[in-house]
Amino acid sequence: MEPVTVISGGVSVLDRSDIDTDQIMPKQFLKRVERTGFGEFLFFDWAKEPGWHLPRNPILVTGRNFGSGSSREHAPWGLQDYGFRAIVAPSFADIFFSNCTKIGLLPVVLEEDEVQALMAAGEAVVDLERKVVEASGVEFSFEIHPATHHRLLNGLDDIAVTLEEADALERYERERERPGPVTTAL
Image (cartoon, rainbow, N blue to C red; front, side, top):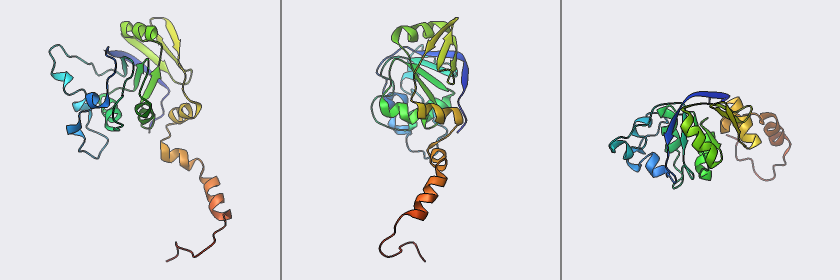
């Protein structure tokens, strides 16, 4: 996973609330096992609507309760494959938020009025290290769990986080009592 530090560029606006994962990535496209190639199916049904336009910018700004519904990982995969590196909204579904951070897609929670200002800005900078979003000369602060902040800044997926504890894991395995038969011997 690539480290996330500063994401800057154009803002794509999807001014809708309660967007669920079925709308983000419809079920008929969940047959792939790779994490790539989902971007072309993003918001598949909405993309057929007259006037639909969602530019491939690095930052998506959207309404509250983004990513609700089923816990499919395909929704964040599709958003990332489409080109988004950060998603800004007033709120996210918990599992969706977690799934985003596990692949290096940064979800940012801002207040409603801050999200509306960002939608109007057109361009923005999301600085994870400083935990601010800058647009039109204004900065908006956001919070993120310290462990998630560390993981994203350092580009650590779940396996890499576990490997950071390799010494402790090896020490535990060496020192723990093993009553009963050995089941790992050949």
